[in-house]
Length: 386
Picture 1: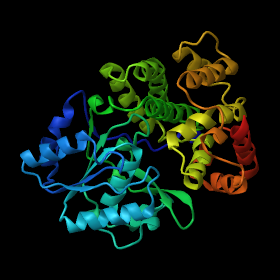
Picture 2: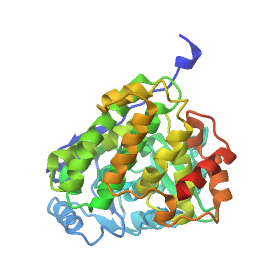
Picture 3: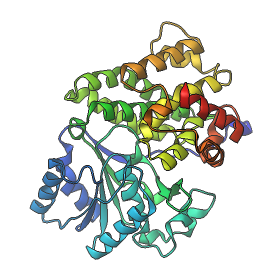
Picture 4: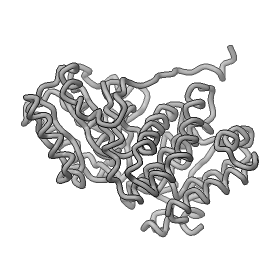
């Protein structure tokens, strides 16, 4: 077999999927051996009826849950540290992470750090770093997504902002993969339209970048293509009618599919979005949605051979790159996504920092066209003003 067809392929965990499946959480916890879970969510969800109902469900099952919700939209290191303190103070034996990508990422990082002595940053996703962890100190994780975007529920890593370096750091360990995911579309019904759009386009970006990343991974590519098709079909429906359970379910599935697919790699969109989110505290999915067409233009020649199949899967009238780009631009416009980064609060004051951090981001290595800081700065400035 040719050397460029070698790879390590890993696929995710058990997913309990379907409307109303949240009610099975006590059974899932019992099967996992968790009796005193730390319920991790974000500050925006803490007072929602769903969290109160979830706590009541656990109490009725005789499970003593501790709630931790001090999690920012872009989680920072102190959120993880505080979560570990809550885990230990509550005598917890597992983590139930409930929410969007921020809550899921924070919850997984808390579970990792519950039994570690090294600092969080020692487990940055670099060769061999994960072996520094005491695997027996990692608490079991149940993930319950309430948005359909990041796919963090089927991932083995968390993105956490290091406050000192102002950078997003990917924390990785194989045991950070949740043992079970409860994927219940009823939990996404109340999402505001702008969050539905931003998270859905986050998932689309995952699928798109994974499919276009170099390397041989046909299983990931197949999942990415089907994920894109599901998003094209379901996102406009859920955007117009947030109560459409079928559309919500398809988006939840597509979000998980995007995260499975990006084991093959991501690219320039994420390489730029990570520092933009860290420096300007922007919503990750929205940032990806704005940047995507600008990175597509940069990669046009490199993805020319992949464009016809994407166009066919998306049922577009043409098969050229311009047909695909035009669809992406009109699709996001119909969903109310701004055209430029400046419209979401980004300026050019830290353009060099964004470029340098993007070039150092592991996602840059997966871009179809090799990119350095200069190229990434050009793309960033283009995305800034259109």
